[in-house]
Image (cartoon, rainbow, N blue to C red; front, side):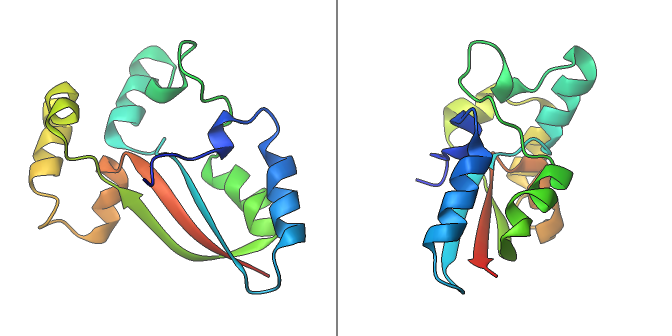
Length: 130
């Protein structure tokens, strides 16, 4: 299940990244999944409330990887092979989303791949050790 990422739950995720980099042979693959903080719903909630939906106090996500943090930490040891987005399509999630995101979810098959970032629940990275 791609939504079971570990890094956002760790208080020192960079230690794990370094250990994985040490353990893998050159060219070895590392799969990383984390909440998509760049989705339309995350952006709107952040603009309105100054918080990210999956990083509130009652949640257990504590480490955030912005694009800049990803570049200076993970991409220090790994090359990005692929980036994709896990899109939740279950009815409970669909009911909870706002209309702009519902429209994107309904049209997801017709939209270019770059729009997946707006509706993806999790971002999934496939990385290769340098």
